Image (cartoon, rainbow, N blue to C red):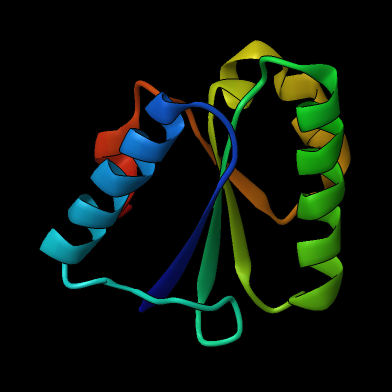
Length: 106
């Protein structure tokens, strides 16, 4: 399996993306440089500001349209702060909260 990680937000999110990449690599899952070569896409989100929230929601919807055959996984604090908004995005998204990084390879 191959995974692409796209990160938005603070330095904590940058660090969390690196942690997720390490967990994936340790489980023989390759982290790739482009969405096109990935089987799954992780969008690591931030929820500090409304413009970032809107940008991320629009980005997730765009990824679902562009890559309907790929799994989209939403990670980061947005998952815990407002899961109802993520439910409205679409049925083919999975979620990983910031305190569940150990489940990244699942």
